[in-house]
Amino acid sequence: MEQEVVRLRCQRIGCNATFTDDDNPEGSCQYHDAGPIFHDGIKEWSCCKKRSHDFTLFLEIPGCKTGKHTTEKPVLSKTTPSPKKPISAPAAAMATNLSSKESCPRCKQGFFCSDHGSQVKQPAPARSSASQGSSGPRTKIVDINQPQTCRNQGCGKTFKEKDNHEIACSYHPGPAVFHDRLRGWKCCDVHVKEFDEFMTIPPCTKGWHNADPVS
Image (tube, rainbow, N blue to C red; front, side, top):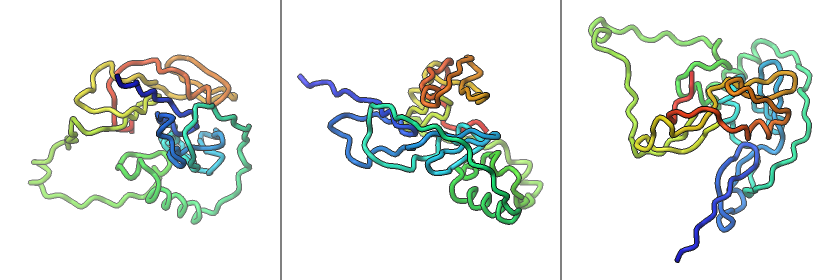
């Protein structure tokens, strides 16, 4: 009789993967080793200085450290936002442009992004009247057997469309609230002081898995 394999959940910030004691090589875990900073609507990882205005995209910023998975919760040091330094307009525009082209997942997928919403967009080429009359809304074609990652807040699980149904996903419809050093979810009115506690607040809503981030 085969012994059941026990899979454990990694507790490092930014990982949340499952693993076994026999399959946990060095470098298999990618995580953040310092806590986040929330200031003036900006979410920033203090360890790597990566930031975003959008909370969902902030949680998708890949970890800057690698190591082994662990079930021990990290002890995060208290962090405070650094004082703002004046940035010239050309430098700010260049930094925004580079960020949008190289690292912003929302811009790469063609969604509106609050970080780069002020960019000048190139005008679309004019279409003939024939093409305008025949074009309609584009339909996304999805392989029902292709594994996808759910983008609902608080879920993040991998699923296949053939197994998706109206109560497959447990998530927070949101929004996330950060106010007076409290972190929580408006949808279920639960607020805590520590970020690692916030990340473990159980989802309050059931629904369909969704692989497309909310724009």
